[in-house]
Length: 252
Ligand SMILES: Nc1nc2c(ncn2[C@@H]2O[C@H](COP(=O)(O)OP(=O)(O)OP(=O)(O)O)[C@@H](O)[C@H]2O)c(=O)[nH]1
Ligand SMILES: [Mg+2]
Image (cartoon, rainbow, N blue to C red; front, side, top):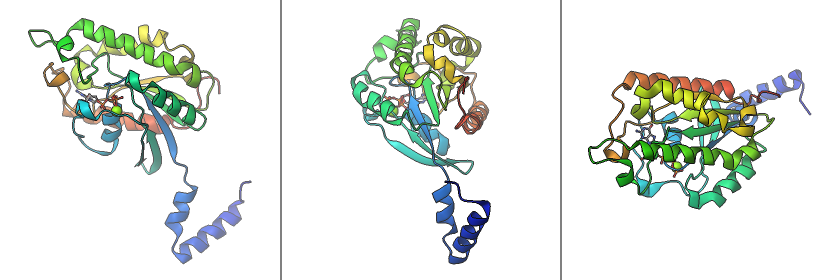
């Protein structure tokens, strides 16, 4: 039952007088829930950290996510809870449990991808060729993994739903010189076509960079992505999150 405006005003006045107005405000403020998905090594955890920290530390491969921790934060005074998930194939049961647990109460799904520039505990010799460049076959293999990752959850979270899908292409500091090709892949190309039921969540695609970091500490950075780009893409990401939060998909 909604309380009337008159009653709400009286409660507000009493709380103000008695000095518990801040507690009252936070009690009535909804904390929006964002579910973070994406295969291992794409940058989900660093991305959550980058929302409240200017430049988070690079995450060492030995400390990848194992559970489904929640981080509380405010963006433009709006309270959020970001649920991180573990992307590693071995953690499938933890991930699926988190998806099923939160699917009825989520306000936004953020799906993190990085055009194949995944970084794992192992894989450096496969990723980096003798001349220090990144092997295109490694990237292709990981792009296939990104598609498999979507197909794990699109049947549960896709379809008509009261939340939207935001695809964040992380690691722009590495792939920015391929901007058009990368955007096409996620907005209209192979990846978009594989979204299946998740297409009804009316996906929005946006680039991001949490840290400047060479792949496996060796691969080249884009050379076309500077500090200004980082600030602008980050500001845009925050804006899109606030705009999409609590919005329904295409048919709601
Ligand atoms: N260059 C670059 N590296 C990044 C970026 N974001 C994350 N990384 C690095 O990529 C690696 C993986 O990042 P994580 O945030 O741990 O990836 P994750 O998606 O949480 O992986 P799981 O916990 O296994 O699911 C780490 O070494 C990060 O520091 C980025 O924007 N740019
Ligand atoms: Mg993680």
